[in-house]
Length: 339
Ligand code: NAD
Ligand code: TYD
Image (cartoon, rainbow, N blue to C red; front, side, top):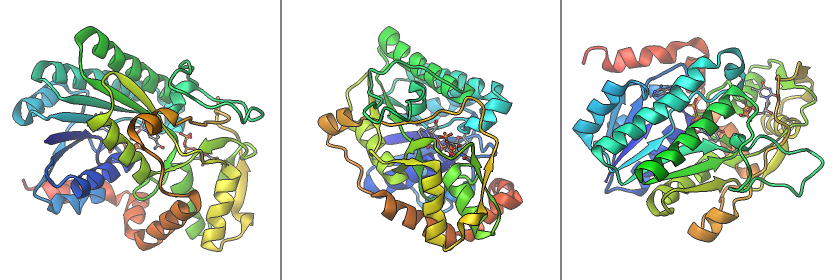
């Protein structure tokens, strides 16, 4: 099979490409990525050496580029990771979120309609459900929880989900959607909580915790998310939504303290800063459906995952130091400039 992975130069898409190449030796993988600030070809350096992998630079909202690619490659499965993904950026600049996350999704599905597809899979987020109160630990997001978004980011992701489901119903497009909780692991861009705290702590810089640090996220190791997407896109029911999460809730303060402990750095690095506007209080996923229908369960306990993640950032200093220095954006020119 030929699998088109959009947004594969980013955090989860990059991990997913390695997951597919390792677990499905019969398949070919094509990555379409615009290489925005969040895209980093250094993440895909090893994949580039695999003859079953091909990288194409392009924007999912560019109809001509997308249609040309579909015509040339005729993928069997499309998995859409490409998105603007950072809530804080969506507060300062919402427009690109709607363009990429909503219109880009529509362009991909139009191409699927025109050229035919075995499955279009949309990688979505638990943030489409809004948030839960801290004092109701009995409440979880199920697939039936109403969409109720807080940020321009989550609003754009929920809008995309609705368009995907509309294409399934109206045009009988074979789609599926996964809505996952917060991921962590290798290749995570150091603007997000966990890699930001690891990379700053390693340099003995202050660690900016929003508000009181009491907001809760349901953390899942990225490899477990990749396994879930792989299962759903191959064996999940058409037209269905599957929630993905590991029953692993931690407050932001707990997460930051765990990182400091792993690194042997003092808690005095923690600095409480002004809260994010509209900051969601708690996310918590009920993953019963994907477990019941597809047998998926998370494999990585948080303690093990965070230890491996800290080790990865220690062992791969050049990856994140290039990002902090802005050098990673020259990588495409270096690799592709002469081609
Ligand atoms: P990321 O920001 O690390 O990567 C996004 C990738 O998409 C980058 O490589 C970027 O270059 C590419 N991209 C952006 N705009 C593009 C465009 N117009 N055309 C083509 N490529 C474009 O994001 P991530 O954390 O890997 O998230 C991937 C997906 O998973 C997103 O759809 C996100 O909403 C979803 N998700 C993320 C999390 C999480 O915790 N990070 C949790 C649940 C769901
Ligand atoms: P983030 O990694 O941006 O993911 P999301 O907002 O999509 O859940 O943030 C995770 C949590 O960490 C969120 O509650 C905001 C908080 N946070 C901080 O306290 N400080 C920071 O510098 C960042 C980036 C996030």
